[in-house]
Image (cartoon, rainbow, N blue to C red):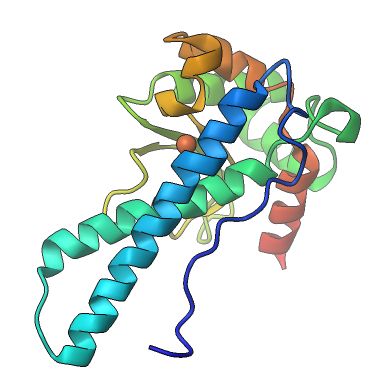
Length: 205
Ligand SMILES: [Fe+2]
């Protein structure tokens, strides 16, 4: 199994207290150190199991294994995007996008305020656990808001994500109890538009 790479939990790009008061240190640490880590370990455990089965030339349950694998990899990728698309206020968190992404949002949604309203509604309205994401379609080059249920639909997303918001209860329950809408509102104070812009520019190349 040498030379095989495995997933690694990324460090938070800011201190664990830096998103307060919008996201508390306890909430953020639990979310990153426990929940995200569980997806990393889950994905790696399945990869190891598949490696062993392939080495031993034994079979494994493809349907169950691939479903579980996409859940953990989806969780890991989405959380990795999520941490980086937030920032403390003193490092540019909150406010509005500027530059090419701002123009694209205005063109698609009519105004930033309209985009914010639609994205918030998408996040609040996710059925059960999931995510809201702003992505760009490779075919039309148009920005699209999407809802992701759990972490996946057994599919590795092909639309490129510029911004995501985790609305699993584990993302906000300690701070906001069952009031998801309050957490979504607070998110706009720590959204990192510079990172979303960077991702957008990378997609445009
Ligand atoms: Fe999460």
